[in-house]
Length: 265
Image (cartoon, rainbow, N blue to C red; front, side, top):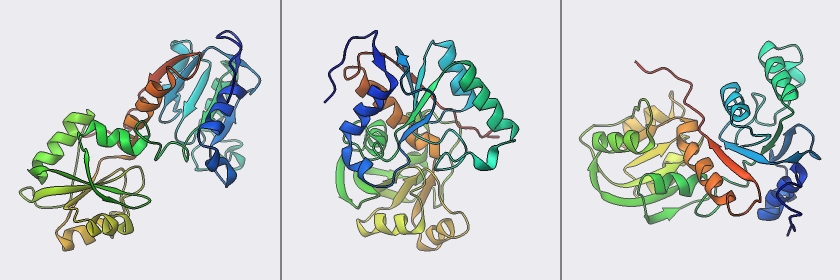
């Protein structure tokens, strides 16, 4: 484990090493986690924790005086943060220039945080929704027993608890739900829905789904499907990370919410 030299002498590389020590198994295989931009030897004092380093988030981080960004999702528009296809792209160049001009360091924690206990992406979403009693789980999804509620009321609860702008679902609004599955982020495919059904789920809450087959299967199978948006399903976990880090790193920690990009009418 790291021995911190003092609040004024923490390098970005030491923050990265903290995460490598936290989930060492992640770094023994191919992973998207790690540094994505900036000087790893830079001394940092204030860290922004966010779901994605969008331009809006980066501007807010600079406004708050942050010099390092910890993000869950890619900074450069693809899973591996590869930039070869964006050499002359105006959006990429704008972000790259902003990062350079403000001397920011970006570190990504994705694989190491999705299923981290208590504070990670899945557990934080369940806590936010007051889901506690586990009925069963696979590697990717978890099913909870909840007090009986109909699908419409469940959608209202999810919208209210997460503070999201809009919500949609597949299913009969009056359908009773006593078991609900959670698949964060992109874990709303047909295989994930079927995994949830194995544990008696009446509905799967997920970030994203495949509309032209998973949603239609849910419709034909008479099971609820509630895609709430990738960022909406994972923001609670990054808020959880900020809370987790406050007594782990000798640095100021700021949580910056990543808004849903869609406009709802």
